[in-house]
Image 1 (cartoon, rainbow, N blue to C red):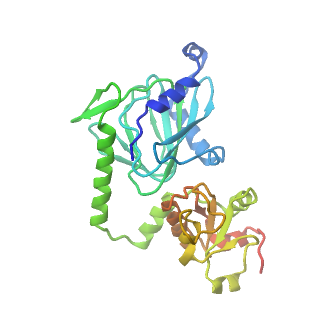
Image 2 (cartoon, rainbow, N blue to C red; image 1 turned 135 degrees about the vertical axis):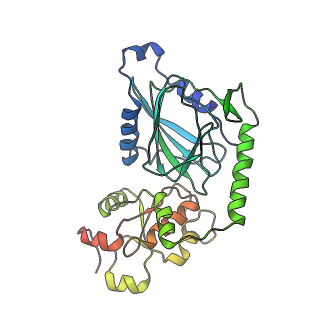
Image 3 (spheres, rainbow, N blue to C red; image 1 turned 30 degrees about the horizontal axis):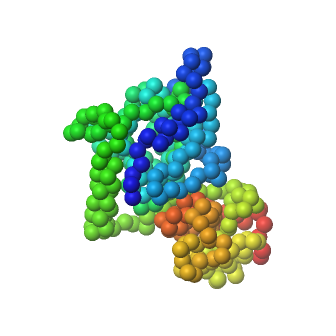
Length: 314
């Protein structure tokens, strides 16, 4: 997999950029204001239907372009990275909406960034952002003034050196990521179920029962993974697909010969629920590992749905 640099993103920004003279009349946003912007935007539904995954490079799209700031959504498959870069004259902020990213800075320890933990920076801030996990990630970015220029660097020791054109750095990052993942595979670690659950939920944008009801009406697929005995006692949600946990991945993997007819691509929006919202979190995270980046679950499960007064079949 060839890791993308920032050059295509700069070209995309420049192609729709506002002339520089228009910024002189605009009140530019501070990094703190940009933090609030990306955090609020990530909690909205204004981006989720726009996102796509690309194996050859990171996908990105400018979702808003105003006189004082712009907003971007970026998707990251495992191993994809920006390389070291700055943002020219723009301040910025970004937040992880789904998955986990790492931020690398010269002379500093890598910072693992979980969903809902925004990062803000001023002009001339240089970093390298990577997806070193095993699942896709989505991030929301804002820049002020709107992004028009970026500079790329090589890391030599603890110093960043400006570079001209492409180099072998992207391939080096790619090899480094594979070495790290190989080491992880060869040195398995023990985790408690609480740690597994917390890790799974860190990748999810979990939904309340009311939110799940709304997005299901818009076409999302509700999936009931409770065993038959629980369904007989508790009841059912009208229209939900009943797929028990032991076959869930095979039914939704688009490459599986046992997949459901609806499981044709990785953009499918699947909302899993169990009885109380524990097993469903692990199941939704497993679907994300398969590439279904929009998979999530209902916080509180069927019990919370029923307590919210939403439709059930006794």
